[in-house]
Amino acid sequence: PKDQLERYGVIKTKMQGEVRLLESIVEKPKPEDAPSDLVNISKYILSNQVFDILKPQTPNPSSGELYITDTLTELAKLQPVAVHVPQGSYLDGGNPLEWLKANVTIGLQQPELAEPLRSFLKSAIS
Image (cartoon, rainbow, N blue to C red; front, top):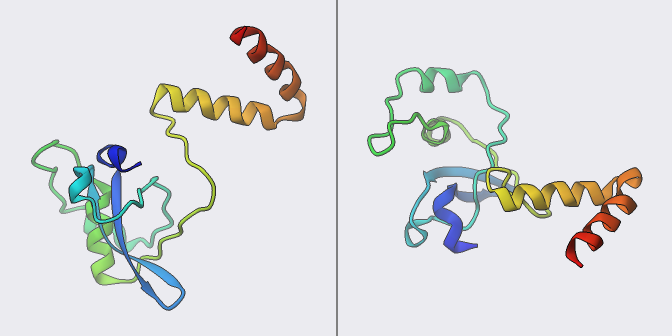
């Protein structure tokens, strides 16, 4: 949801034929400043060139943190960085309610847990 974009890095991409390429990542933007509604879920396969960019990086002035997202934006200026947009849903493990939803979802998908979990949830709700 657009109102939650400021909790994530938001990516700007461009299409090159059938491939989506990274242009930049804006870390935790205000919703009105977000370049898209695609959020970065921090799953990377990177070349070792990323370390050359990461070494001289300085902390972000507003947070004091180093952001890999700044490094990825720099890397995208030097070489193509492909972006994969997964299908399905995403639950944020850093949010307590989303963490619970994820665990219930996974539990209900496990044959040995599904029925006992369903029974527990029904009794907890009633």
